[in-house]
Amino acid sequence: MLENKEHQYEDAVIVGLITQHQDEDKLIEYMDELEFLALTAGATVVKRFTQKLSQPDPKTFIGSGKAQEVRDYVKENNIGTVIFDDELSPSQLKNLEREIEVKILDRTNLILDIFAQRAQTSYARTQVELAQYQYLLPRLTRMWTHLERQKGGIGMRGPGETEIETDRRIIRDRISLLKDKLKVIDKQMSTQRQNRGKMVRVALVGYTNVGKSTLMNAISKSEVFAENKLFATLDTTVRKVVIGNLPFLLTDTVGFIRKLPTQLVESFKSTLDEVREADLLIHVVDISHESFEDHIASVNQTLQEIDAHKKPMIMVFNKIDDFSYEKKDEDDLTPGTRKNISLQEWQKTWMAKSKFPTVFISALNKENFPEMKKMIYDEVLKIHISRFPYNDFLFEYYDEEEEN
Image (tube, rainbow, N blue to C red; front, side, top):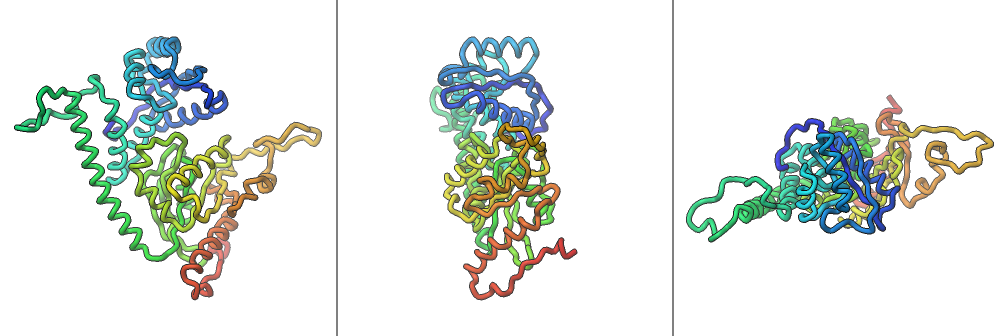
């Protein structure tokens, strides 16, 4: 778990619950996302198991009969991984491993594994490793292999210390070391942010896989890694951008997701500081996703948790190129759906009438880019004038691409 290794695709099954707090439609949506997470991590989901319970079973999350059904299926089909859609308690994880006798992962563990694969810099790897150890510590059992050779020497081992207690001590020492390392890096990054001067700072925020990095590349004309997988970007990227003749700093940040592990929120504190200290947020939304409204709510909730929800914001609804428009017949009286509402009609909805400036674009095809760039320019200029009230006459908007 603690190493970033190449993943080969392996077969897996996923398991989720319909509860009093999560109906069937919501479960299907979460299971779709879990399947995408599994694919990103390197697994192919061959079957889904669902069960309706008033609340998760405290011992095995699912009922004993469903656990037996899962066990029989994975045995018959030689499947080595079962992934649960919620975070399992240490006792649930232990009981399920004993019951099903294959590798058991929960949503948190899966996300941590993806982060471990995606981390490129030393800083990102340190953050992920800390989150992994914090997740692992309460889940240590005698089934775990020993982490390293027993520390020796006088006074280094208490009387009767067991192997599991030694493992816990090793992990606590490692967590303490990683926290100290991150404090040093956080201080360095804070200094870097201060050294950027008074230039206006703009941060791209949004749900994971909504096209933030593609938009970053298009606006800044740089090459930031972008891929149609979850959490393609972990490391914060900052680029100087000039629209018209107005310069500002544009930051690409890690994507948010529902049920984001608390360990990652804490570990990626410095990454989130880029959002906290930004002057303007560009909230990117994948309009082609069925649950884009839930994604907006999830991002807004995270922004509120990090006290960044009162900042000026631009709403950018991306991926209009993925939106398949099917015109209704004139005599069709059925209510409109997402498949038969045109872009012009979308622009008349509540989204375009929000309290924030709103634009509909395709980052991939640069559709509606002039409108978006003018919107960003206007918002950045407002902040710039409030900071430097005597040089606003120096700036005049023009679009280089249109002129060329």
